[in-house]
Length: 361
Image (cartoon, rainbow, N blue to C red):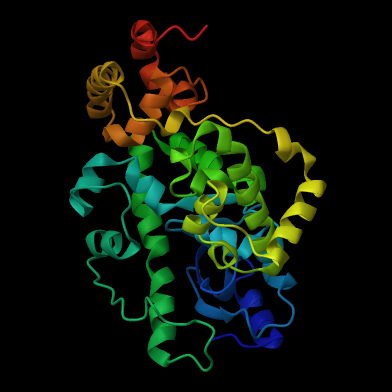
């Protein structure tokens, strides 16, 4: 394991000419708002090692390598890894290949790995593609402890050892099915959009359990409490539920509970800093259950999409989820299948089914 600046320098010199980087991270996110990055594992064709982020004083040389224009990150389920590194580097990779996204675009292989669901583990994928069964003995380890057990380091290294091999197999099949551009489009939209890693405190009400059950007249106070809680959590770098649980937040919004004096003063000060929250309006339509008519319309759309999914070796859910279809039926024109590769294979069906949407004018 790389534990100091000199060892990092020597490792970076060793991989200087290589641009395919298999990457994984280990981090802790139990008592903090932001992930505490502990390890970055990197594998290339010639080297594999763990970088002890907690021990390295200067990570800039590492970031210089990771964010080179010609460097391709090869990652499985990259969102959390990108996020953990982003909070230290404030940068996103220039090129990315997510093996989980690739697998989702290959229904035949996806079905071989797992009979249900769209989220496939690296372990499962590696067992199918490489015939290697990886052990998962350290999934709950506190990665801040030092020294790390030798077995934990090997476990971490296993998470990148087979990524490049998996990448080449998946890339070849995507190329054969003419889906490489689809992968690039998916990656850009779901992982390389910097707005995904910026926190909008005005929208944090969306993740609060029970918010949709608040009466309309209480939406405003609910949004204010959610935004304040998020701001406090960010400023203190503590989990948002340590500031205020979802249940407590809802109970305060409905008047069942009240903030203590200290929190009430902080809340009132916060509102003076964000006056726009006093008149903010939200749309809870997407949280309401579908009507029988909407369910029937969704079934028709799913059947039409199923035909296209079969033609293109895809699952229906990769093209359009039930939630996305409901949003479309209700007039939402921002759904993902109205642009990009999804629209290209569905545009005939979309034109044909326009009459299914209720008149929203």
